[in-house]
Amino acid sequence: MNPNTPKSPSFDAPQGSSAATRFFALVPCAGSGARAETAQPKQYQLVFGVPMVAHTLRALSAVERLAGGILVVAPDDTFEWPANAEWPDHWSRQACGGATRAHSVYNGLLALRAQGAGDTDWVLVHDAARCLITPEMVNALIDACEGDAVGGLLALPLPDTLKLESHGRVESTVAREGKWLAQTPQMFRLGALLKALQSQIASDFQGVTDEASAMEMAGHHPLLVKGNAMNFKVTYRQDFELVEAVLKSRHTGDDLNTQGIKK
Image 1 (spheres, rainbow, N blue to C red):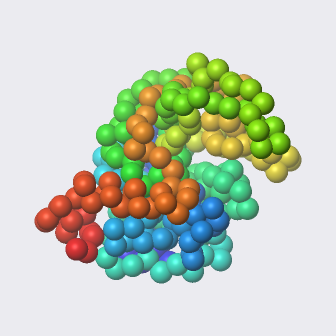
Image 2 (cartoon, rainbow, N blue to C red):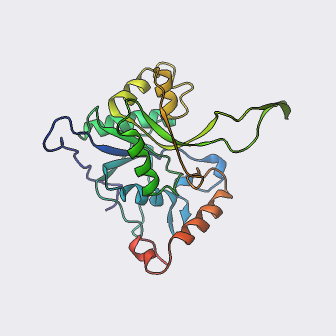
């Protein structure tokens, strides 16, 4: 299926108890990734034969507990989804991306709601450029957060010495104890996250660097769930070489064909 003309899935209310909740994925994909210095938006850069974001969607769509998901792209996005990167079932491509990540996520939440997702359903927001995510990492986040009143995010305790800079020189060394590197997915109830982001519209989402920061501004304290160092965000050109090496180590022989990747 070519997501340039997708048929948006309808997320009907779950069967049985009205209290049943579901899990949805939302992948903001409207940025340009200028620091990667690629000829096209970095999410569409070929990695191991397919666009990087295709690896991200493949991993998320393999999480059985996810009822579906959306890829939020820019309104003027004309990228043609290649035939060798299978489009996942129960996913749609929504051309409602904004000028910032926060704006894209906000619009994506509205799109999910329009398709039938409820305010009590969980939404897992994941970076398109964290293409080494695995179903196991996602399931660990769901296991940790589904009974939590707020929700949470994958993150790693800061491993390195942290320096405070001033005019290109070290101003001081900052204690790393208690400091974590935020990753994604970040998992919150649709209604709560939408409300948190909505309260920041007037400031043009100033200071909202991720979904957890929006929830913090609303007075919540998201749960930190230990992630994995492999779940890094591709940011610079050299990151692509590492990603490709990891993916090659994960897939060999016939497994490449079952993953929809051409050898």
